[in-house]
Amino acid sequence: MLSALIFLSGCAPDNPSKHTAPDPQAMIVTIPDARVGAKADFEHELIDLFAERFNIKVKLYELPAGKAKAALLAHKAHLATGLDLNGSYRFKVGPVYRSAHLQVLCGTSSPQNVDELVNLPLAVVAGSAEETILRDAQRKQPLLSWESRKGVLQPALLDEVLSGELECTLASEHLVSKLRNLHPGIDPAFEIGKPIEFIWALPNDADPSLLAKIETFFAEIKQDGTLRNLLDRNFRTQENYLSPQEAANFIVMTETVLPRYRKLFQNAERVSGIGWQLVASIAFHESKWDPLATSPTNVRGMMMLTEDTAARMHVSNRLDAKQSTLGGVRYLKMLRSRLPASIEEPDRTWFALAAYNQGIAHLEDARVLAQRRGLNPNFWANVKQMLPLLANPDVYPTLKFGYARGGEAVFMVEQIRQYSGILMDLTSEAESDVGPDHTSILPHFYGPLDSIEGLPKMD
Image 1 (spheres, helix red, strand yellow):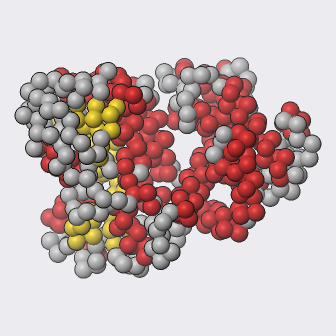
Image 2 (cartoon, helix red, strand yellow):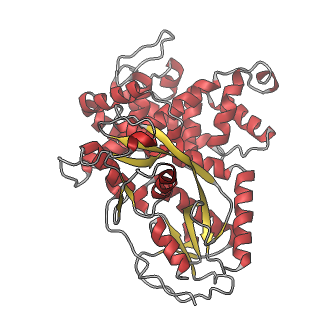
Image 3 (spheres, helix red, strand yellow):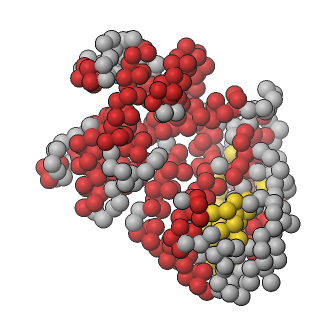
């Protein structure tokens, strides 16, 4: 519920006191800059849930990590989210809730360790977790040096590596995985340092009740599976269901085959409300955009419909691309409507896709299994762990609808999610204003960085 949040980027809120519990009308929270993608989205969802859980209205300011720490030290913020535990000794900190490995990414060279990184042009964002890792490495290899960049975000440095303007940088495994999907020939050189551990931080003299709330909040969302589901939703590309060859083939076909059917998929979006990139990704997974595709079991067409499904969706010719696509999205929409109201988006769509593959009855069996194990059955991250068990002879006899190849449904859903993510990035690039000689891998990251000047002093 975003109604609990007030998002600000420049105006100054009322002055709260640092010595008392935060005023529900004026709690000041810094979150990562929205242009860093999944990390920012993840932290925004977390603080949204926190605000709802404790009925607190918060004012959000986007700040990079270095400036967020400065805001805490200057008593201009009550709470900073998404900070690296390493280097947060000056603050009170909540529990670690996420970790991420950093990888070295280079253009033409392939260093295998820190020693081989010496003398290579290397740059990272000033004050970032990446720079902290390099400082740790420098203690063991004093010859290691790098350029500390101010006023940029990490994706801009990745762009420079791709374009040849910069030789090496560091990036999280999630960003590298996303990059490899768009540029399958890119490989990280090596993993560097210990995993980054992420925490929420408060000023050292913060009211203890706020830290207690944070500890309670994270204990609860770990226990009920909410945290696992948010991690899956935002950082799923760390589980790569596409090989480099599959990703490369998909990208080629978006240029050679997709243009023929793009209007068809966009029309399906208008009819169904399902995003056209997702529709296109389902069709690619099912038929590789071949309207004449036919399986040995006589599943046919762009969306590979069975005879029964085609009849239910009033599809008279499964080999007609338009009929098949519209029939497929109508069927997916019907499955989505039959799911319990307690399943929210985007999980609702992933559940519907699993039902598209294995049937809604077997999906319900997987949800029952999740409940038996104390997991929230409304979260895709939980249920996708249960679906493969539907083929386990020790498990499926205990279920109402018996045996199913549930692992196939997981593989299908996750591949479609990755195809859809790639396609959304590609179409975002094509529609951006970035010039043709320097197309950003993630163009929405760019823009001026905020400072702490608009934040009020809290004392």
